[in-house]
Image (cartoon, rainbow, N blue to C red; front, side, top):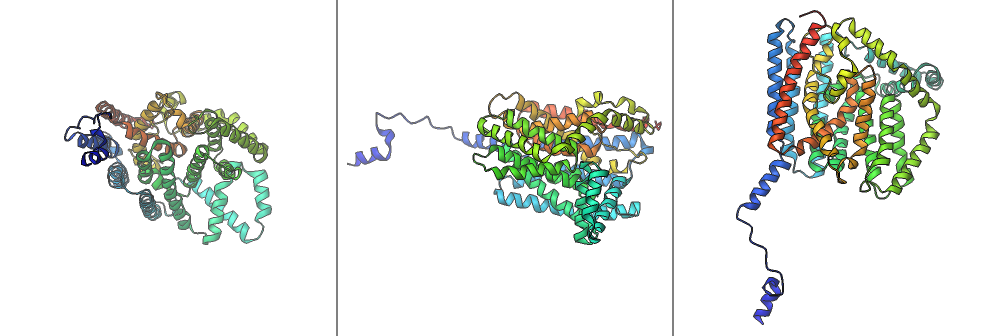
Amino acid sequence: MVEEVNNIQNPYNQQSMMPPQQPIPIGYMGRVRSGMRKIADKFPSWVSRDAVIAYLLALVAISLVYNSYAMQWYWWVFGIVGVLGFFFGSQYCFNEWGKLKEKTFNRKVFLTSLVIRVAMVFILYWFFEAMTGQPFMFESADEKLYEELGTWFTNSIREGKWKSEFYTWVTENVDLSDLGFPFYIGAVYYLTDDSVIALRLLNALWSALTCVLVYKLGKRNFGENAGRMAAIFMMLEPHYIIYCGFHLKETVMIFLLVLFLERADLLLRSRNFRFWSVVPVFLILLLLFTFRTPLGIAASLAIILALVLSSQKVANLGRRWLLLILFVFGAGIFVGGRISSEIESLWQRKDDNQQLRMTTIQKTQGLARYATKTVFAPMIFTIPFPTMVETEGQENHRLLHAGAVVKNVTSFFCIMALVFLLINSSPQGWRNNVLLGAYLITYLMIIIQSAFVHADRFHLPAYVVELLFAAYGVTRMTKAKHKRWYTYWCVLMFVAWIGWAYFKLAGRGAV
């Protein structure tokens, strides 16, 4: 009886069963777990180290070589805090927060993002007051225009005649892409008694929420670790922090963009959906057109390509075609001829706009004639380069130069991520991420064809998606050769930053 019981408790004692597997060598699983933790759960320290060393060396080298045009000390502060904060901050936060529960992680990301951005709002408000005598950025033409339009709308509401003035303004005076932000400002001003600070604190809120949306989007497309890293990247990226202190539409616009991509991606991957779940996605898309027409075009083409090209694992063929039909039908009803005519006008004017902008730039930058779209197109994931010298009228560039450094460096991981996805023919390859990839490529192609290929502001709607791919790229860079390639890239960026400083000064006859 005892023998029978033993046979029941340990079935491998029976001769008819398969023999037990060979014992695992002592320490083997520990090494496996340790290696997995190093690869999958830790932020590579060499990513932070190489980038920071390259930046600091470039900063010192440029200041020594072009000492007559060395940046003022406060630009150094913004730059060093921004670059070191991003790379070392990303390393610390990912390593410390990587194993937190999802709800706890989201709360930490949101609250940390909000605190950083609120602090920056007050810092920049004081900084601009001290430097320019008003709470607006240097060369604040666009900010003042939005301020005036917002104030006009607020006064129209208070006087009870906003409907007639709104109708006249919409139908006769402005493009659709100039509607969204002025009326947003007007509504905020009406509710907050024309408070500039309130508007920028709302920027901080929208930007903090964007970080959480980036996590959701990244997790669904690239996995938990990549999603968390992307959220931390977004939380600490200098551009998106500093722009909260500007009176510009980029912060609100990027929130709407990421909200659209996250909702559209969820809709594509949902096994069950109702007709009314399509409506919010479509309405957000329409809002994007009221902020920037090319952004709405890129988002529209992205969802169409995702519906056509996504793998069966993402969405079955029947559901994709049903969504495509609903999307096209909705576009025909709601969009009408206004957006179509603006798109056609935008395309017809693109060459004239580009020529006009280049002519304006060449008045102060003699080498600008060499900065053509043919030159910039191969570098589209990496540019713009940072301004780290004192050139007239480019204070905003120096304020934001840390963000340009971060973008230049992280573009390496974005490019590598796209390569990894393109060479992966499995369902987990590029067809699993068509929406993000299609949007990124489409928007960048539009930028290349425009007059703003090196304009920092116009890269931000693409950059937020580049950070998603960059986070995925970091999680995939697990081999010694990857580290070596990255070191070479940082050396290349070091040379590019010094070369860009020379380009800036030589084009103005300063060297």
